[in-house]
Length: 124
Image (tube, rainbow, N blue to C red):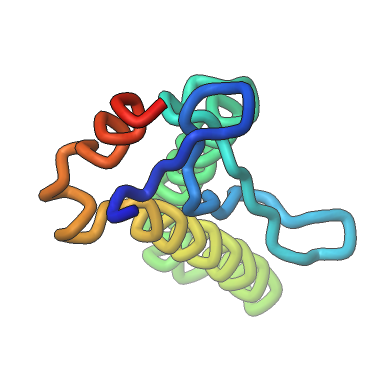
């Protein structure tokens, strides 16, 4: 099968490529989601919204950083706090980039145009 999707027993197509979620598991481990083919489930929407919030917060943080760095009165403690928040925002952005990059179809998958699913439907 050259497609990144496969049929789930008794259901529709599911992605065989898990999505890295934008939040950690209970013990800090990576969390993944295997969703339905149309990716319209509750957790998919929640992950999309969380990614949007994280990226927006990072954008706002950059604005605060510009202001704080231009303020000569900012002390070491404030700059350290800013640095830690910038690190967190960068980690979020890198995690989102990894997640989205992992969902980009390979040339083989993109070229098949979903023909593997169509072939499966003919064989049932």
